[in-house]
Length: 247
Image (cartoon, rainbow, N blue to C red):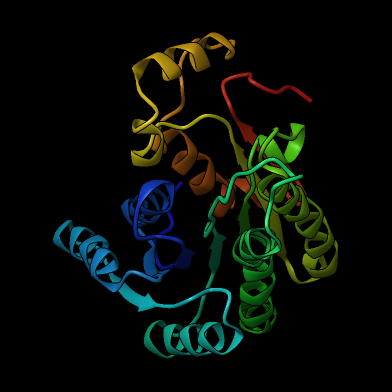
């Protein structure tokens, strides 16, 4: 699944799953524009990619800010010449039972997880339309498929990404642009590490494959959807959850 010669833009790429996806795309041969708020962490990702012989550039951006998104996409195209692959990975949580959830926490999650994807797609689409090719990959979640108590905002944002994926797939298919989603289940990251070993063991009991997922499990799914091997796949939600949800 070589991505040699392709240019990818990955949001939320400074850490965790987003970082893993950026590294995987680079390993497959793509040049990567990494986007997030934390410039220092982005530079660490860029250094890791370039040290391994790849090409990457960092863009410190608040993906909920339309002007910053426009500027970053314009700069990435100026530097790399085009964008072939967009991975909408940026995401946050602000967990609380719905009766206690503050409007600010609802808005923050919807803006970061869902509206940012719309903003990035809108800015990247013209260059993909012009070259008559492209791969858009939205990172949703198993909780966008089954819901989760205490995460009404997060679940709604991730379910919204699934609807957005299907709409964009239909809008852009005639120009050979695919749009798909990856729905991770319980993935072991720095964020989940703080939950403790007992929590992870209990989570694994709910997963038919008997283990939590890894960052690389998800990154490999993204790399597949970004490749030529997935050229006839669009509007699809690829579940990477060990069987946690089947449907």
